Image: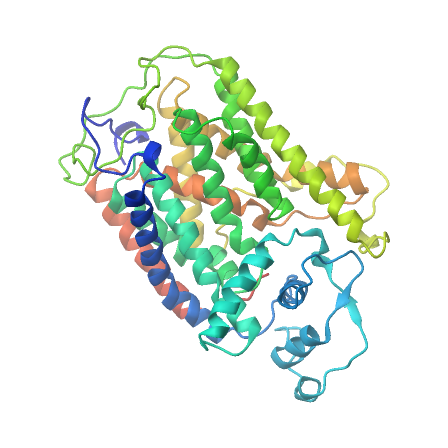
Length: 477
């Protein structure tokens, strides 16, 4: 890492060869992004296909309901209502595959599945967005005869979800000032970590979390640089929750980023260290611009941010979040078959303050197992270094503040909302924070400066890859 924990500033007046985000609609840039997507899919495919092959069982963490949702969408039934039972086709898949380690495969039920309905589909809370897109990809694979099994085809679509997510992560890292090599290293590190790639090897809407999180942060950062209009802000609030409600985590991070711009006192320009002689560092024309330097049409200098602009921006994001949530709640209520409570065991009569202590840092450790713990320390350490290395309210500081606060306190959003809306309490799973991974990882890539640091990071990424291939990854939903 560079001195002070931040990326060095590029030379003044230098023109970057990276595509200008203001021209993102051009065919040339679209072609580059498409090419990068193909590369990321090619990198992801061997690992994910191998894990899909070696873990055919159904994950006990909600995958039966997710599989059933895909089965229904495949037949043209696009919205699952509260109270709908699992289909016979889904029950047959469960019987054939089993639910390790709880339920072994049942060959008899696999050949002759029962026709009576059993079990409720708990995924009715999800909008159909992920399932429709996954079914489109599965239909392509089935049509190409890559497989004849809908479940396997839907799981293989995870390669496309991974490729899209890593493409956005790579571009976001470049937008924050990371070199191409650093962005590539961190992208592979994220792919190789079991706490992330497991969600790309099963049918689960969490497969879209990294893509959704990366797109939301990238869009708001481009708005911050005046390269996208204000129309993008309501979409950043609405679209994440129209994929899955738990994607509200990244919306909270975006709101904190904008509110920090409205409230953070103006400071002096950030002092940065001189670049090292590494040819792939800023000084190389291929290096993307610094995130705290003004883009076209942006005010120059280290003056006060436009606080009113950030306050209006935060209002637009919140309005989008509210509109998207209300829209889905109205649709969901219309298609509900019952209003009964599916999980009465979580009902509570009073709020307990110790719940908040139990959930501290729930989203700060998306990589909880094995070698991934070191990656957690590395990336979150980067966030803290950005906050403490310099003064001022630049984009890096505000993004780091948003990432840190949301990682540590973000689970409280769900504790309070569960109690206030449905009078229930349950532990908040760490996967609800997956949308923060692109932001934290991109900050980590931007902080990989000297050749030595990148060499160590590359070696560590290699260890993650070996662990991912050799170790049996427990299926998660």
